[in-house]
Image (tube, rainbow, N blue to C red):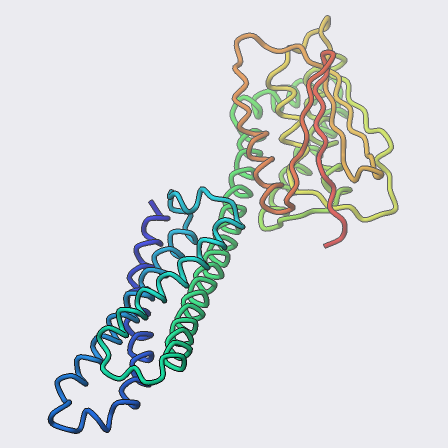
Length: 348
């Protein structure tokens, strides 16, 4: 729908451009025959000559404008289906064929054909300048489209970031999550005060981190790892030895950046879609691969039968990475193990 609106707007402006270009193309002809026009006997013929020049210039400009706009907006057509070199060849053939047809018509309507060679050169030059202006207009449209696309992608990125942040916050603050966390906290206050204190600190760290990254497009890997550790600790307090997680070789002297809440989305995805029992332990491993500039998140697979995998969280994460970095996290499920490689970003 938006393409059609843009095309219609471009065509509307194009008509005006053709009109203005035709006027400019007619001005030299007016100057050339002005003395003759001032003679009463030639006034009508002179005006007709000017009108013919204007109409021919307008027709030439409109034909090429139509072809260029269809090409710019990728409107389905036979021309757009051709290869690039074929399109260029067709444009050249069209230019010379159209020029020659209009030139011969102009000769038939013009009384003074004393210098046909000069007339032909000037006539072709007029139309070459018209074509140059039309291609300039097309480049302007392409630049406008690119600018609009960048703005659209930035807005999309903001929406995806907000969506991901709200999703992560919803996962952490939904009644089920809070009920489990507070229930474990309530029990631990009397049975294990140290665990109760850790739960309070972990929950506080998670909420503080989410507030901190609300307006950030990138965060330090170390901060994301710390938040992920607090997130896993909360689930560890709930599942005990049914959930095992490892952080392998995540210490680094280099400043890597990552899109915020990436790890929490992947952790939540693993816990939500897999059975966790004493006989079916969920293993989650997070390790750093600086050679490949990626953070690898692996989890064992024992899918819940009653929880369909919509993949919304992973798709949102893919979109955010694609828009912001041009890269996509890779997903691989093999040998009852699901692996995601999250691209790392060097200091921006």
